[in-house]
Length: 63
Image (cartoon, rainbow, N blue to C red):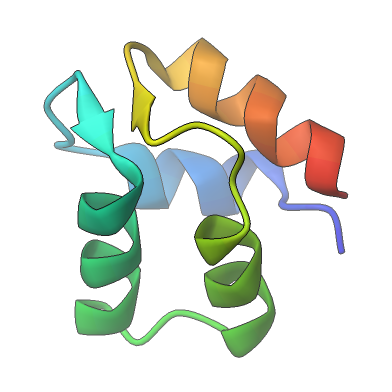
């Protein structure tokens, strides 16, 4: 599954960086996000991301 730019923008809106994988998973669950992306977030290789670009690049490796 490829995350669309709009989905990612909506998800990243208001995030403070650096952000942990755990915080991303929690935020996605609180916002009722899709199960597919939730599994991708849980599978992210890094435990922390310093910028939206870094997170986007990590998500691209899982797509």
